[in-house]
Length: 93
Image 1 (cartoon, rainbow, N blue to C red):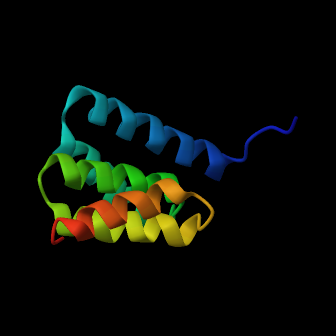
Image 2 (image 1 turned 90 degrees about the vertical axis):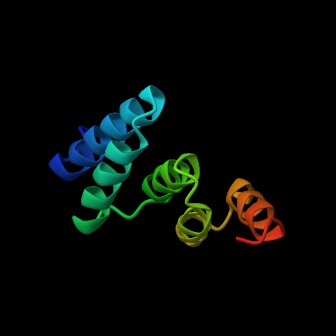
Image 3 (image 1 turned 60 degrees about the horizontal axis):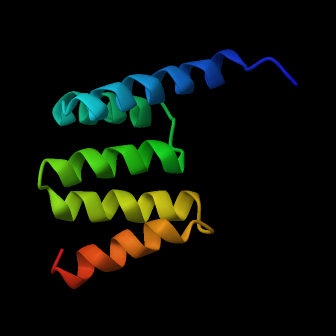
């Protein structure tokens, strides 16, 4: 098992902070942290998924769909994203 790099640790810290804000219902703060992480080059499917979840909970459904699409591009084998996208599209978003 290798020691995580400084970059990997930073991404894990972002994910942990974002998860904490999402779990507490502070969706705007979660969104803020997602935006910072993405602007710093952390563009994993999980960061986009968390940002989509924040948008969804803020009832910003079109933005949520866009981020689920980005998550799906980053991880095309995860069908869960495709299901969320289809669900939002069927509702007109």
